[in-house]
Amino acid sequence: MSRWSVYILRCGDGSLYTGISTDVEARVKKHAAGKGAAYTRSHKPITLVWTKNMSSESAARKREAAIKKMTKREKERLIAIQPTRTRSVEKIKSA
Image (cartoon, rainbow, N blue to C red; front, side, top):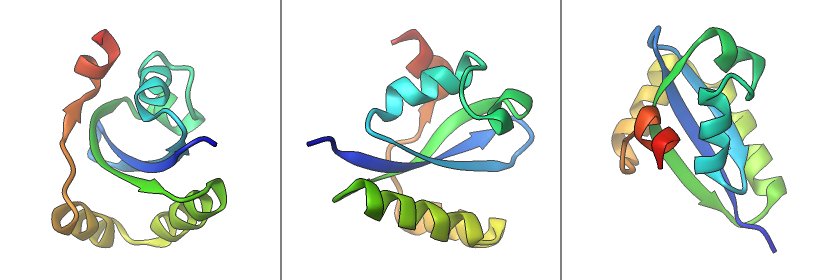
């Protein structure tokens, strides 16, 4: 059984991108290489700022949808109150 995670990336323009994956680091590498979501191809991801492991794909999709409905201010608050180890996309890419 795969472990699903929800993640938030901070892009170069300050925007936040939310996604889900069973392998966040591999997915971040795809975004960095321009092979991820269309959004991250035009808004270069800089930092992985938040991740949360979920119990199932369904739970991850529901949490992703809820986060995508949040305002940027609400997302910034989520990042602040549930901090995870922030990692540079460049460091993830080179790992």
